[in-house]
Amino acid sequence: MPDRVLVDFRKYPDAKHWQYELSWLAEDEHGVWLWGPPDTPAQRGDEPPVTFDYTNVKLVSRDWWAAIWSTTDDPEVYVDITTPAVWSEERVTMIDLDLDVIRLRTGAVHTLDEDEFAEHQVALAYPQELIDGALASTQRVRAMLTRDDEPFATVAAARLAEALALQQGA
Image (cartoon, rainbow, N blue to C red):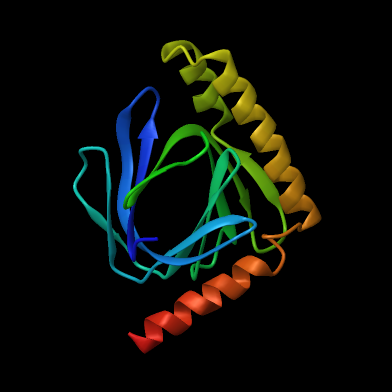
């Protein structure tokens, strides 16, 4: 796999959303792990670029979601509900389907942007398979976070520790 991967988040049907490059970390039964140090540049659509001020680890799952953990206080984990990832050369592309699931450090699990998802189903004419896939994935992720299933229990913390060690060694 490539050392650097362009994370290409899109909005339905094919509009640029978040774009940023991360480094390859690992691949396991949960998916592909990528990481970025503080000051990783990112751009949302045509907005001016920003930088992430923290170390982060992204898991691109083989399911309808991608998660990010960082060294910030909260949330503990932020999960974007997406179409399954498509890999090509040095890029991974997913369509962000509005819904997000977070777990705070208190253990509270929340679903975000349900209103945006409902609006986009109509305004962007989401196909039924996208609606069904997003809703099913949201339920699965909420259950995994609530039960503290892997990779949310210990694997992600170990991957974040790996990224921090790499950052210190750079």
